[in-house]
Image (cartoon, rainbow, N blue to C red; front, side):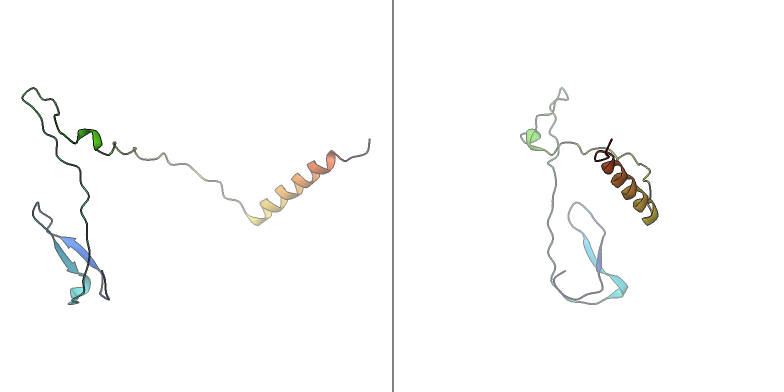
Length: 97
């Protein structure tokens, strides 16, 4: 949106267009910009082979969902003890024998 409004959503999407509806029954009259990003549809011959002119310039398939992982939480107290341990281990190399 290029002006003040209540926010918008897209409704009634078809091959030939869509409606932009303002939230909360708003009646703003502001400009907006939009763009379309798409891949061309496949053209297939009688044998079922893809013969599209643009088949080589398509985006590759996107990756699948990422695996979830459990994160370990750290408190300030845990961090302080880690710092102390590091300092102690560093001092070991300077210990007089």
